[in-house]
Length: 226
Ligand code: ADE
Image 1 (cartoon, helix red, strand yellow):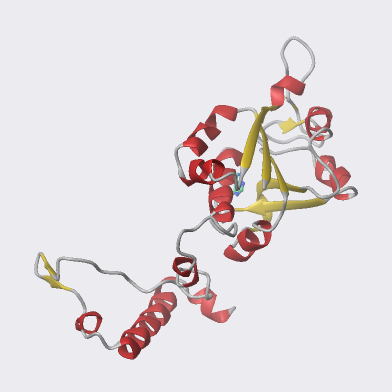
Image 2 (cartoon, rainbow, N blue to C red):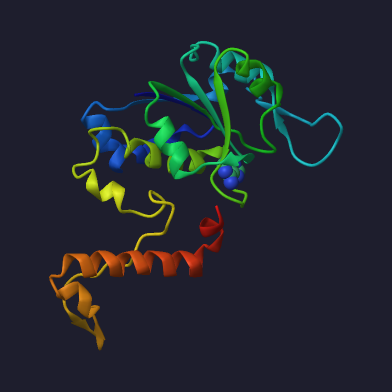
C-alpha cells in the first residue's frame, strides 16, 4: 500500500517510524510519503488560508494550494481521505475496507477546515471520504490520520504475526472485548476469575462471551442497538 500525507505539520508524522508503522514499512507492506502543503503555496508568506466567505470565526484553507498539492498525487484508483469532525464516523469496518486499497492520500486540514470545493472537485475523479475519528474536535487532521493509519495498517494481510488476535478484539464482532488477566493469580488481594484456570475451553468461551455482552451493555449500549 502506498500512502501520501499532505500537512502543514509534516514533522508530526515522524512518530510513524517508531510505532508499528515502522514495522510495516520494514516489511515493505506500506510506503509512506509526507508532503509539506506550504511547498505548494505562492507568495513570500506561503499563505495557505483565508477568511471565510459569509463571515464567521477562523480561517479556511484555500482550494488553489490544495489543488496544486493533490493533482500530482491522485489517480482514479486513489482514495482521498479528508479527516474532519464533520465527516462520517471512522470505524473498524472503515479500517478493514481501506486496508484493501492500493493508494491512500490523506489531506490534513487545520483552522476551520478546507474549502469544500476541494472535496467536490476530487469526488468527480476519485473516491473521496470525509472521516471523523469521534464526536470531539481536535486542532487538525494530523492526529486523526495517525489513529486511522494505525487502525488500517494492522489489518493489511500479512502484517499481524497472529491474525487470530484480530478476530477476538473489540469491535471486530460488534461487541467490546472481554477482560484479560495474566500472572500472578493473586495480586493485591484480587484473584483471577476461577473459570480461566479451569482448563474447560467451552466454559471459558461462554464466560468471555457473557463478559463481552455485559461490558458492551454497560459501556456502549448503542452498539447493542445497532
Ligand atoms: N479534525 C478535527 N477534529 C477531528 C475529528 N474528530 N476527526 C477527524 N478529524 C478531525
